[in-house]
Length: 540
Ligand SMILES: [Zn+2]
Image 1 (cartoon, helix red, strand yellow):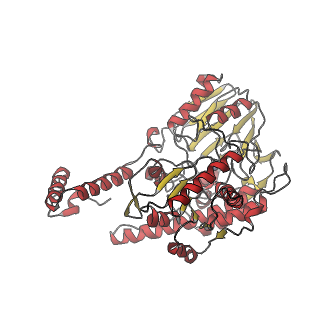
Image 2: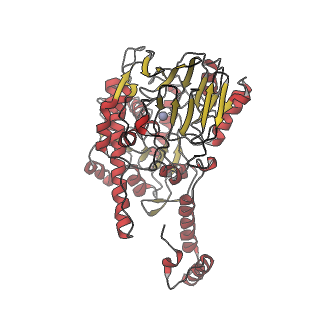
Image 3: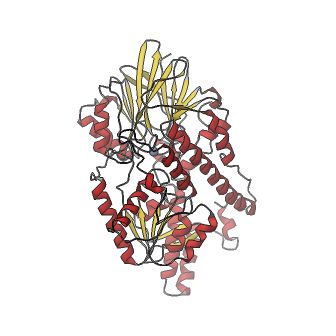
């Protein structure tokens, strides 16, 4: 048969990457990521897979980030018993990250079920538990960069450093197709290069089809070398210190936290920034740090660049919730790093709720903030936000500090793609919001990639792969209309509406005006005031 390639995630959005490759003798997934961001997207995590899990022969994993690996335990629960190929560092990071993701889902479902019980609604199950994640681990098979591995049937694969996070790779797939060999390259997430902390991206050239991420496909960042990045960080720390309060850093637990900690310790030690206690308040980041100390050895420099995270007089690791609670009593200058990086889960939410209203506090966002997350709202200057059901006024200084991004910018993506040429068939642009993917398409066309062979797939799109290009196959089974993936959904509109209503009520001159406003709202909604909310139909 002609090989086919389907995109079941990170098509029209940046999360949930999962590609399904079918050949004459094998069905292989590249990644099996979790959707993050808006509730519309997250709902997909609960739906059935759009393929039969038990019929998949192998999974090739590019890297450990949850938006690439996060549904693997669900795949196992759905009947997948085959191998998961990944580098050793990716395997070790998955061990801590998937267990953590399972724990988060158990906690979220506990809260949701408490509410469901009160409302007389059916109870729900977590997608998977920490225990499921643990049970999955024996299915991992480790691979080495640059060494070809026989995967299944007529499929082989080789991992190449992607320069994104520890262990991350691009995956070259060789298919022994009926009419001759076919070569595909999945970029995975690509790093910017020039880092002291992660290997440079590299991969061979000459492929039939290229699948490339486009997170920053429409943006160029100012290139920063390590020294100027540390200078800029020291300036942020001095300003946060001058504001008089703590610095909150929503932490991306893997790679960025470790790099940021290294730099914070260095600018404190050198006297460029005021010294103080640095609390890593994230059990996940702490366990991930252990993997960096174990697996971070750099063959080129013959050292582990993270070594000083073992001992520093400033650094405090807080594993237990009780230790985290003691931070509430601290005053003045200190730094708290807590997950998650986009503020949509984890201990950072507790600290934000406690500190966002204080002018002395500074929040330092250190990376990409997906549509629909609290971090995105903060980065866009929201004056009020809702955290765990409470409205919180934002008076803290909110700063973006994007120098630790693990992603290549548009120029970097184009350069990487050019280095992989010639590409005889199609180039699929995935893993980006629509403007970003379109931006990369235009830039690739401008450097000579034939426009008719640049494809931006939508979720669940399937393509027949020939050496000359890809033909779209209508499957008629998209789980989302293509434009829905990146859009803010009505849940966000509701939150914004409620915050606006509260603000209008507060600003009204007196109670009479407030009652009049509420009456107008009730009229507009067509609610019978005697029935109250019941008049609105099912509660949402
Ligand atoms: Zn990633």
